[in-house]
Each structure stands twice: as structure tokens, then as C-alpha cells.
Image (cartoon, rainbow, N blue to C red; front, side, top):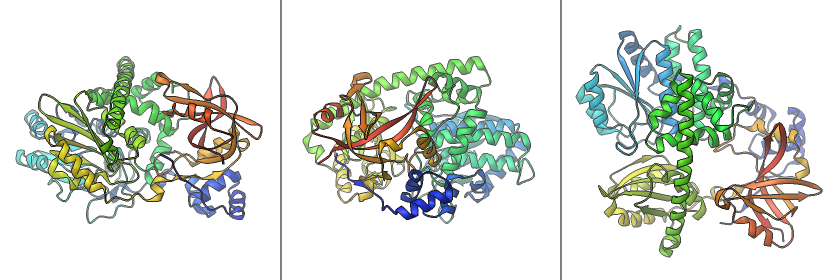
Length: 579
């Protein structure tokens, strides 16, 4: 889909002044001004964010009551069970709180529902089993539960003490748990509502540790724990794709350092499997493309407990074995993902009437319910439509679905409007999950399409935001490393995107990777030649080769580190033939 390149106003005087005040390059100053940091103070605060900018955990709605109950359970010697989720956010949340309670001397265990047998979130059968095992235990949910109204009522009927910590979208009716911890609870005003599950869990751990100290400061051994736990918080925050601004950016910025300096045995074993062990500096892409997919693969294939075990084990031998297993699971996931992606594209192309609708609802009996979410993101991007993909179970006639948004469409609101066609749904604006009877998919497709017709994307959701137009000659290693000060990069804080015009092909474009999925090309601009890659864009190779004359390219510059060498490389985002 052609994208409009939107350029910010260019104030040469302001850029020059900001560069002098901050002692940075004009390129970095130009990006800062393009992103709204016009003054030196605001720009400096952004570049040099500190841990002290994290909000006091006591401000988080429900945190004080939850921490008090946890402390009482610890002092009484009661068993505490952490009820997690099977994605990276839920797994890291579970491991983080487990480490906290273990270091506090607690009797602690965790429960992760089986993705295929139990589905997402708290379920009544699991609560019944936990109660039967120990009627006096305290159950703390992480990254789930805010929509578990019936389940919270069941816990109360059992007499099971339940604390729910979550970050997902709120329904009209909230569960009647003993305590709810959520950054956006009605009637509250927490300064930052975009924490993910592990961010909330980190704040709870912080509040517990403070209570085990003098009420404000944690004991030294628990302070050390918090400084290492921020690494787990970074993994879950990047993986859950919450906006990397405010607290989330601080958590990831300092979490990346914690991962390098304070990683657990399991994480260090995972570094070996991903090739990160030799890196002196980590970035958010190392999490997003290295660590998170392997942790996620366990949950997607029904083995999330193994991922939690990896993050909590104190056995080097077990850590190495689990890390290797997760790496193999990820390879299996990639193979299944490629097959589903091919089938999904073919399904859309076979139905011209679906292509005319504002959303896609796809279903197939061969699809793996743990992997369709990844593919839904790629299908939504490819066809420029919010997409729901449903894995059908031939035995019970129930479909398990994953939905991904496009252009800012509010998925949670859209599914809420079609709730009568669904057995269950939950999630947030950008991503959601659902269960549906196979016989009702067609009527859901029609209702969802009708609901989405009133949606009109904002230009900024479709446009490609450009930070500056530059020459490739301006991009040396020093300049790109300086741009990394804007990181960590992710949603709402992407890598700087630049445009260069009148660019020539230094050699014919080539495809690379399995199935020729990716593009690589060498580009020449005013005497400088750089390698560029575009992942998942192998079809561009023939198109670029056939383009008449020079090109305009939009790209994000990165440093490619290989065998001790550092070279500037371009991540190609879009291109056009110059007129």
C-alpha cells in the first residue's frame, strides 16, 4: 500500500541552536525538534532520563492494599501462588514476582494456564484446584484477571483470597476480587496508564520490598533484587509492544543494562543460544528479535511453565537445557508460522468480496492457535486492514482467535460491539483474543465489517513520519551511535526515519533468507555506498531493479556489528522512483 511521507517543519535556526546547547550533531538536533523536543531542557531530560523518574509505586491504584496483604501472608507463613499468563509479559511478570517473594522468605509457587486446554486468563477449575491443594493460600494474578468477573466470584465463594494485577482494557463490570491493581482503575489518576503486566508486577514487588525495609527504602539485598528485576521488566515491556515513553522507556533503558550486568542463569544461557553473550551493549531489538520470540515460543506451543522455569532456575545445567529447548521450539514456531502465513494470504486472494471489506476475518482448521497472532500482524500490515485469524478445532467446533489492529483501529471497542457473536474476548486497542463457535464465524464477519465501516483512519496513522532528509554521507558510525541516545526504540518511540533522494543502485538488488523473503541491496549516494536490507520485502528486488532512474528511499540507520567490525547499514522502510 503506497504511503505518504510526512515531513516535519524544518527550522534551521532552532536546530543549530539546539545542537549547540546540547553539544550534539545537527542530525540528532533535527530529530529531537521533529519529535517535539524544541527546548534544551526538555530534550536533555529525554536524552538523560533517570531511574528516579519512575513514579512512586504507592501511587498505583490498589498497590498499597495488595502489598499489605502480601506482607501479611508472608508473615503468617501462608503459601502464595502467582497466577500468570503464557505470553512473554505474563511469563516475566510471574518470574519477577516469584523472585521477589522467594527473596522475602515466602513459600511461593506459580500457575500458568495451558494455552490450549484452559485458554487465556483465570479459570474457575484452576482456582478450585488451588483451593483444594491449600485452602489458606493467597493467589495473585499477573497480566490477567481484570475481566474475570465470574472467576473472582468463584474465588470468593471458595473463600480463596485473590489479588488481581493487570493492565488490559477495563470492562463495564470489574471483578469482585479482594484487591484490584491496575494503572487505569476508574476514579483514580495514576500518572502513566500504559504500563504492561510486568510493569505492574515490578511496582508491586517494589512496594513489597519497601515494606520489608523502613517503609520507603528496601533492605540492601532486596534493593539489589529490584535492580536486577528491572531486566525482566524490560523484556516484558518490549515484548508486549506498549508505548516506549515515560516509565516504560525508563524501565527498558535501565533494564537493558541490568540484563547485561545482572542476568540470571537462565537468561545467560539464553544469551548463548541467541548469540547475545558477546555483546557489550543490548538494545530493544535484541529483546524483540532475540529473547522474546524464544520465551514466547514456549507459551505458543503449550509449554509456558518451562519458560518460567528457565527464568527462575538456579541450576546451570538445567538452564542450558531449557534455553536449548526454547530455541528449538522457536525454530518449530517459525516453520509453522511460514505455512500459516502462506495459507492466510491465499485465503484472502481467493475471496474478492473479503478484500473489499474494511476488516479481515480468516479461519482455518489447520492453523495453530498459539501462532496465529504473529501471522495476524503480518496479514494486517500486508492488506492494510485490522485482521482476525481463527484456528478451528474440529472436535468441539470452537475457534480460538487472535486479532491485530491497523491504522489505530480500536479492536477492543470493535469486538465489544460484536460481543453477542463471541463466546469470550479480551485484550486492548491494538491486539485481542477471542473464542467463537465455528457456526457463527460468518455472522461475526458481517457484524465486525459493519462495525468497522464507520472507522476513518487518521492521516498520522497511515502516513510514514519522516524525521529528516539527509545525505547518506552524513551517516558514519559516530553519527548513528549518537542517534541511539534517543532509544530504546519501540512503539511511540521508533528509530529515527530519514529520507534520501536521487539514490542509485550500486548493484542489482538480491533476495536472501529462506524462501527469498528478504531484500538486500547496495545503494550509492553522492559517492557513498551503503548496504540496505528490508525484512519480509523480497518482492521488492525485481521492482527496484526495473525502476527507471534514481530512487527516493526512507530508512532507519543502524550499526551492523560483525566479527569486531562496526558498519552503518540501512533498514529500508519504503522507496519510490524519483520523477
